[in-house]
Image 1 (tube, helix red, strand yellow):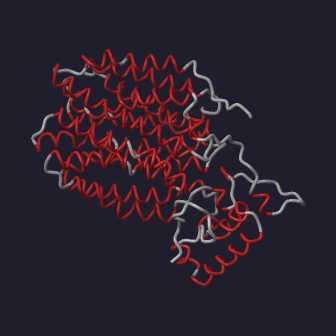
Image 2: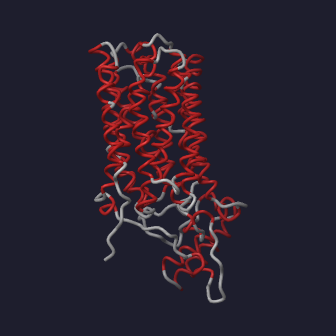
Image 3: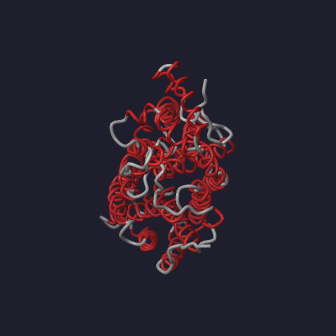
Length: 478
C-alpha cells in the first residue's frame, strides 16, 4: 500500500496518493496516476512537477465544490474543540473530585499539574519541527489517538503517580500538540484572509469548547461519574476524531496546484498550467534563527505567557475562588458560557481588525484586561460582578488567541511556522503551569487568593505597556 506521507521528508512520486484515494478511485486508476506523476516529474523541475502532479492526484481536494481551505478550517476548529480534555477549563471540572477521592491536598494537585505541564511543554518545539517536515496529518492523527488513550488512562487514576502521568500527557497532547497543529493547519491554507478565518474558527471554538465544554463535562460527571466521563471522552477521540482527521486533513494548497485563500491566477497565452499554479504568494518567509532574534517575538511571547500563566491559574481554581466569595460550584461552571460568548465575539471582531489595527495594540489590550480580571477576584460576591468577570476573561482570552495564532504567520511566513510557533507554545505552556501552583500554594498558606493576585497583576500591566512600543520586524536585505 502506498503510504500517505513520505517518512524521509522528501517529495517523491507517491506524494498525495493515499489509502483512501485508492479505495475511492480504484487501484488501477491509482497506479495510472502514479505512473503519470513519475513521468511528469522526470520532465521538469522537482517543485513544479510536484505541484502539478499532486494537484491532479487528490480526488477529495479537487472534487470539493468550494475551496478546500474551508474544509481545513472546519476540521482544525473541530480539532481545537477536541483539545478540551487537555485544557485547563476541561481539567478544572475534575479537580475537586481528584482532591476528594484521592485524598490529596490542593497544593499537591497544583504541583502535579505544574510538572505535568512543564514536562509536556518541552516537546512542543520538536512537534513543530515534525509538522514542518511531515505535514499536519500525521501529527494531528497521532495527537488525537494518544489523547484518547490518555483519557482512558485518566479513568483508572488511583494515586498521585498515575495522576501526574495523566496530567503530563493531557497537557502535552491536548493543550500542546493538538492545539499547535490545528492553528498551523489554518495558517497554511489562508494568508490574505487569515485573520477573518481564524476569527470564525475562534467563534466556534469558544462556543463549543470553552463555552459548552465545562458545562457538558459537569453534567456528564453528575450523570455517570468522573471516571466514566473520561472513558466517553477517550472513545469519542479514538472512534470519531482520529478517522475524520485522517480522511480530510491536507498539508497546504500548493501541494495540490492551488493557492492560499482560493485565489486564482489570470492565465496568459504564454503561461503553462504549471506556471499558473506556481505564482508566489506575497509573504516573507523567515528562518527560525532569524525570527527568534527579533524583539517582537520575545515581547509578544512574554505577554501571552503572562496571560497563559495567570489565566490558567484563575480557570484552574475557579470553583474554589467562587466558593471563597460565597458562591457555588454550579455558579462557577456557569460563567464559562458568557465567557465563551464574549470570547467568540472578540475573536471575530479582532480577526477582522488584524489587517487594520497593529497587533501590538491588541496584545497590549489583552494584558490590560488580564490585570483588571485579577483585581476583580476579591469582589466576585457583589451581585453582577461575576458576570463582568466572565466578560473580562472572555475579552482577554479572545484577544490573546488572535494575537498568538496570527502573529507568527503574519510576521515570519509559513515555511518554518511549525518550529517558530512551537518554541512559543513551549514557553507559554510552561508559563501556564506556574499559575495554578502559585495560586494554590497562596490559598493554602494565606487562606485567600488576593494576597498573590493583587501584586502579581502588575506583571501583565508592565508587559502591556512595553508592547505598545515594539516595532514590526523588518529583515535587512542583503
